[in-house]
Length: 494
Image 1 (tube, rainbow, N blue to C red):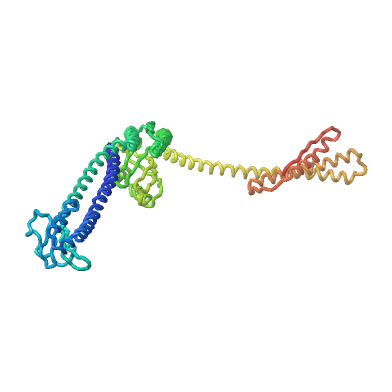
Image 2 (cartoon, rainbow, N blue to C red):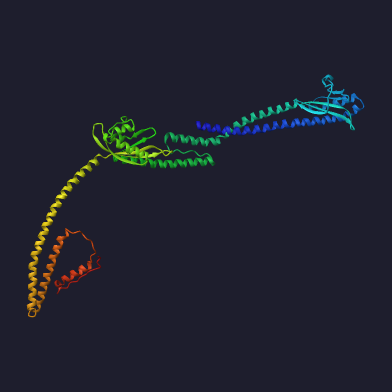
């Protein structure tokens, strides 16, 4: 409520300050106007009145009639509002001739009036001027006015203005107290809604819209923002839960390091990974290093601090010591986050026990080494077998070539000696015997080439499959003579 009260006070203060300034300026303007105009008006009236009295007194001075002179001065009673204090007529010799008011002793008037003049010594106004008739001076008029009533009038105006200011201020305060609710009520609603959300984390709350003005637009925008926050909070909560389940399923712990305070915070599973209970870790980097195998502490410290200084992610593996003395392999990953000045202020990351994978890796290495030994032994055996097979192939090929050469040779001799005396069928059979013998010789050569393949590098080159098929059909042609055979050969690629 402190914020709301402050807004109310500010609204009332603004209204009161505006009203008071306007009233003060108006009242001051009135008072200043009176201070400036009233003395000038009084001065003008004094001058005009002195002129009238002087003009009316010429006859009395010219004919030496004091009674007329006193009657002229007594007419000043009707000008009491002009604040006339005293007036007197002097002869040309400077003697007092008549004075006003009659009740004032003649001793109260100056014995001589001096030269013509007009002076103002607050609050008194003095005029001394000649009384003349057709350019001939017949006497002098002395006029003295008192402006004290005028200043009293101005002071009365000031009091009235002050009363108006006080009354207007009270009215303005009452009106501002009532009217400020039109502005403070929507703001109060927003503040109360924000407080509920802040304290209860309940983003389903919505602020009440009171008017269709700028504050109403602000309320709609605030409620729209709450809707977005609610949606994003729900999505974030769902993601956090999935992340928690994933971390729990993968046996992964999380940690956070505040570089400004030096405090390292572990989650529950990280404590379990290090075999500690909450409270057994004071959150310092020094104690964290004490959990690591001594020979690896310096490397872990140097790698971590260098990564933070270079503001980059880091990943390292180390061995830790559990309270019971068991050694476990731990994989630690972290990422620094920078503050406003570009300096790293915190590091967050994960920790994963990789002991089983390390041990499995070692077992695989041992199996690979054993397998390599076995492969070498089998390779040696296979090499010896290949050699034996090659020797056998050469022997078989050599033994097969001799009889094939004999068959081919005798057949050729038979054709050469008895070619013309042999019946037609015998000539055809002799040709087939020679062709079969040569084909058998080619097979022996191919067998030898096959034996050499194991010692030669594999060479890839295009093969015309269509030509191979045609050759095979041609070879089988003698076998299909006299039969009905249909060969169907499509488009064959290389």
